[in-house]
Length: 349
Figure 1 (tube, rainbow, N blue to C red):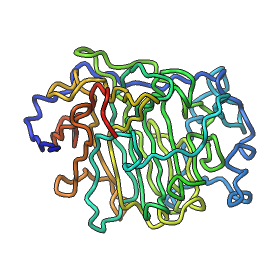
Figure 2 (figure 1 turned 30 degrees about the vertical axis):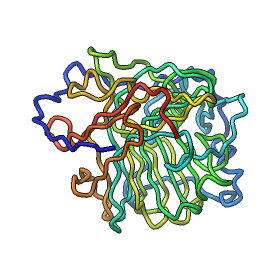
Figure 3 (figure 1 turned 45 degrees about the vertical axis):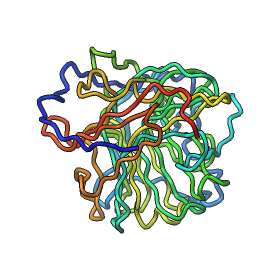
């Protein structure tokens, strides 16, 4: 399969009629637990962990709850929201390029020895209809280490009926420290990620989505970065710290990120039918008709936020009949951007 590097005039990709999609916090789906009794502190390496209050030695932690009074959309002071999930999905899943049935349409950095300290992007939001065992994700991966010891942090948008019991698009995170064997999980389903915000955001739905050929709704610049002061991996949404993965969880990621990946990932039904990716349509030049990432950025080894470079970028899509990706490069209106997606179907293994 071949992928085409397409550079176009920015005027073709102007994002008119763009709405910013905000997460819709619904506290009834969450339990408010003491911040030091949240699942993270059941991890044997975190029993004596002290919650981080400062980043990069001078930046004070700005929590989302500093701007919210306690109400039906936030937890009381001293507590944090933990999503209540009653289904029995296993914590660990195989989310690798080689796992049969999964498909990808992504861009990623060339493995040239470069080290990164984080990444972020603006991601378009779409509604999809999936079967129970399928999932479809638009996300960012931060990884380091050999396959059997892989350290991976993943964050972005997911439609995952088996995980959530519905087909809503939700903000979702995932991590593993040993190549998906025994460690890691979605959201806060296992000890690991430390939540500091009182506002329920992880696992929450969005209050709006894009309309094909019409209004474009985007998730504005979620990012994860390694804090230069502590070495912890910090999740920020809407420029506020939501929580972090402590460095104690990882080995290879403590040295930084060797592989950054952006794009779509799907998993099929038991009958082998893959779900839609992105907005369910192949990418075209019109962003109002395509799922897309824009303002794609990485943090370099000096913790500076920079555009991902064309010469260091590899395009990968493994099922051209089902999913495609078009890389647009840099423009003033969208930064570095690409479009991706497709209808799915019988896509092979």
